[in-house]
Image (tube, rainbow, N blue to C red; front, side, top):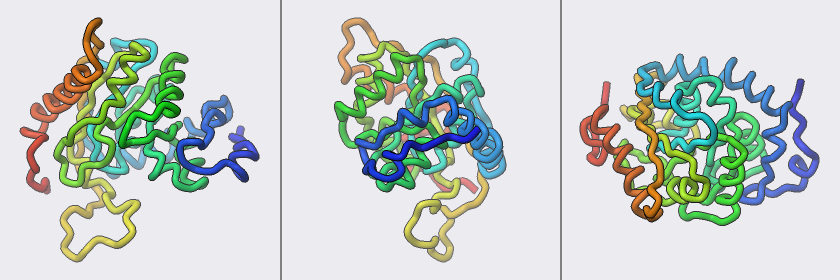
Length: 256
């Protein structure tokens, strides 16, 4: 079975926030995506980013919609999170992807939507259109992966969170599952770079040990503001980082 990309997507639809992605959740696209992930993406992750996966029991305690909120270090992060998730959750996961990076051309948009079930979001602020789509998918029972920092951290430090995850948790009542990624910034860091690594660049690696740690689910309090919830989500991921890496708010040393 092959996934058919609609003609309006192939020919007329512009990239960015307006790019349609419903076709990527059709039965045919889901079959193709499952094949690509199981046969190509996941084996590559285990080859290039072997390591530990902790807290998987936290994932098994929840049924229905959920939001995975993770720190962000690398273009490989989404693949690494997918590899860590049980297959049943991976099949029902939507990825919130930056519209200016992964939906900047039709080719990138089709690739991201088909392979990762990505939807375009405005990463610098909560956008009504992308927020409504994410909320609709949560209401339909999909899980959502989002990076609240709004961009990759080049040195591994956790930066201030934007409010997207907290906003969606408030609107959908979905629990937030905090996730901390360690060392992923060393996994193919130049994958989408415009230039080759500089001589002696110790960041440029082909294979490195990583860790993926999930924490207890965070539920929004009845009278809790989105701002306070956002702070709790950030503190939970920082706490996971302290358990794994010491101090994720400080610039860490290079790991050999």
